[in-house]
Image (cartoon, rainbow, N blue to C red):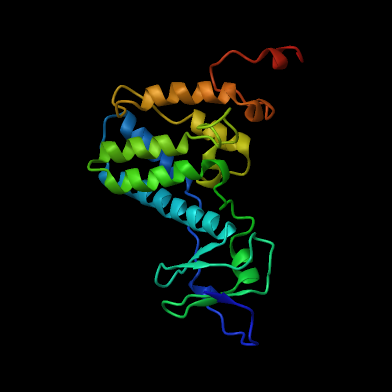
Length: 231
């Protein structure tokens, strides 16, 4: 249920919390251990649950963008009257199940500029939440983590766009993020499937028109012709 403001300023924005992007150094340590055949269950869970929480935040924000706000107190879905994120900014969202309330413009500001809108990677976030929750071993969790951080927006329906990891892993810019992903450690002890996934990732990088415009190309690969022509 939602309604227009009645003059009351008592809101529950403090209960709205978003998971931060994951520290890349933790992911780096995970891949280094995995490359040596070390199954560090604690480290797998540290990375896996951090990504899980981040994906949940992204899915909630994406739902809110489309008018479906998840109550942070009781998990009920509250439908907005506004059709889009910029409609009816003074609308007060009230959960009919527990009474939690927030003014929409304040809720909107809470997630702006935090890389929390799923866009063309929403399906990957949904898949990860399900896969990680159902994983029965550290190796299964590792595969779910790897699939997620190497995904690209829109890759399921068209040419790969920007990396989904931009919303998941902290980096100052896309080039820094791609360089980080490209330099993750792999070895004979890596979880089966990870090195094959890395090869597929490199292919997607070179196939993405959006990424080609950044000037990035994977380490060890021939320099693109467009770059050679500049020398």
